[in-house]
Length: 145
Image (cartoon, rainbow, N blue to C red; front, side, top):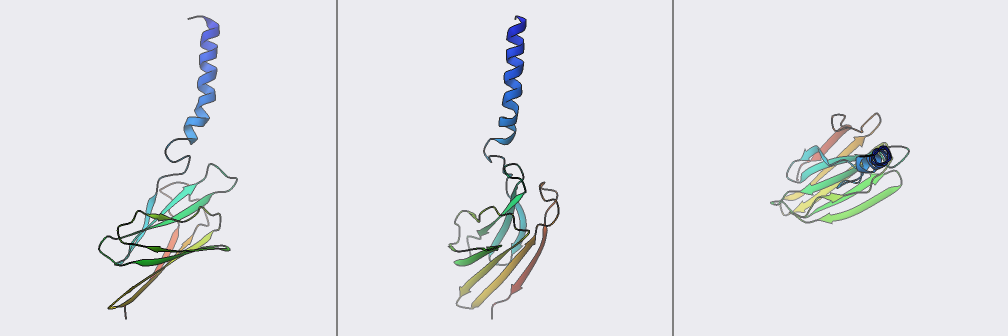
């Protein structure tokens, strides 16, 4: 190989590195991680995007167990509020990535024995751009009654 060919090959590899480091199946966003389980409702997940924006963003998701009932989920992050109905066994429902350091997810499941309510509050203050730095989370569960 001549010298010019080696220089060209080296430059092309350097140019491709940043793209391959942030691209792929997750587009720079990390895979989801378990945040907490909510009794008889499902699993709450979290994920982060610390690549695409000037400040980090996080997203919450909920997967409702197959053998449970339809669940109403309300996400709150800053001024954004999103409400969705989730059927048992549906794929994980993800809420938008947000920069707000405090986010919450309210879950309501009404069945014949009574209504089950849960609230998951997430505090993103700090560095949560790695799976081994999970955020502070509190979960309240109001039993059926």
